[in-house]
Image (cartoon, rainbow, N blue to C red; front, side, top):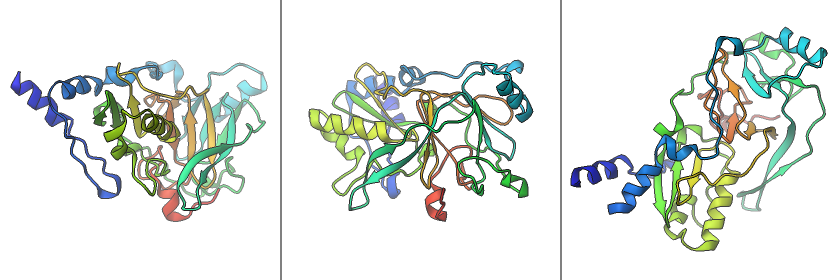
Length: 291
């Protein structure tokens, strides 16, 4: 029993990695073992949709196929297809412009999302970052764009580290971070707040912060190990000067037709320079992307 407890504790040592900071979890005994149970694929599943099993009949549709379906008013399954060194092909999803609201200190505090744009059932969204008709594609990628998808295909549960407090579990997959910045303010950050999350006001604050995290880096698990997630309708938000925020468990297919793991909150690269394509890694801020 001692070896089991020690092994579980060793597996769930938490490091936030935020700005190079690392904090070890100081939890012991049964609390660790219960939380370790949450730190599994089963615990993270909750109400978040899972990807369907791929098959040959659901490979990426070609652009001509999409145009043909749209012109015949044939209903297509909502989703996003990544094309080879080209745009995202989006089917049946509303898309809205949006922006992050910040305080006078530059702290992100809220989202301001406009009404959905009116358009056809299928659209092509720029992925190279060079279109003159952003967010839509104008074929600028044909001048030369390497859109190779390099993100890890392993389930996020295998990468998540955990921090526990008040019976809740904050899980963190840093590989998804888009550096939106909701998790930190002038006073403290989300990881430090876990120390006092038993306070109802602190808990509400943490839940709101996690819900605003567009990339899904942070996921908060309740006492029963189910995710505390906002109930998003499948949709896309084109963040001003930032990535595409994909919400509601939308099916995203890679250029080879295989589905990426379905998640409630995802950010897709829009500047064309992410080192974690197709997902955003915050590079848009470093290069001064505008769109």
